[in-house]
Image 1 (cartoon, chains in turn purple, red):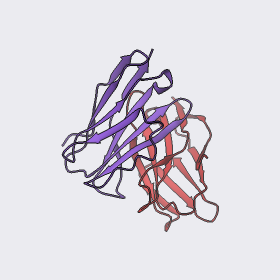
Image 2: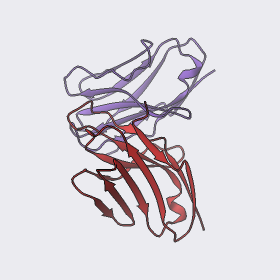
Image 3: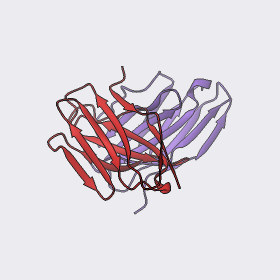
Length: 113
Length: 113
């Protein structure tokens, strides 16, 4: 069916506010990834979910960032107390299983004023 | 630590020419090397990928050349077209490892008509 979808496509927020970004992976894909794309840092891994296993959170830049994946499908990335340096495009990707090709969504552009 | 180095940062070619983008990696444990194509406002799209047990893979006008001993791989776009104008990212992946894609910084390709 459809590819990876993300919402919102754009989010403008004020410094200090919390934001939630949503990802709907491709149906049947067991693996889900979050990446961040910014001008200075390129594409950076944030977090990885695989089935019911504990997520790999090794890429989260600070404890203000968290993510969850409910029911093995939809995922939400939450950024608390946003800072200007959090401004970036947040990309979600999914893959059928471990070690299979990753397919990206269109991203959410976050702007922190 | 930048584990995947990509060059050039930008590339301009004439329609019908050959576009060549190079990447070098440091971690010899990487065992899957995809290339992604990204248009403005879109997420990266998987273009072509290679495993280190082959030296070349061709799909249509796109070819990956892989040199395991030199830890280098490159993307060749034959008969480049204006529609190929996009940003291209090489990446590396460790199957069975951290499951995250490690990306190069990207190459902005412009194909002039």
